[in-house]
Length: 71
Image (cartoon, rainbow, N blue to C red; front, side, top):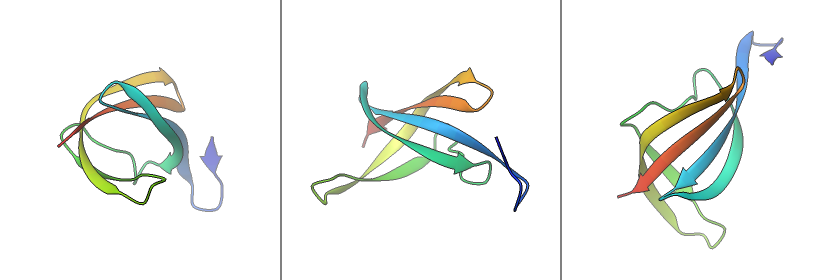
């Protein structure tokens, strides 16, 4: 999907933490995570934690799975 206002590709990213589905988020190419990058997670309980991106799987042209490991 293309964001016609900013001309950025929009992707849906499904996040998995320690092997368990966490949530999904729409991101543009500037926000797309990279392997080895740390990602700040905000849980519903208000707890924040950092997790490291260890793997990215492409499901389709606009959908990805990002696997994180808690640090």
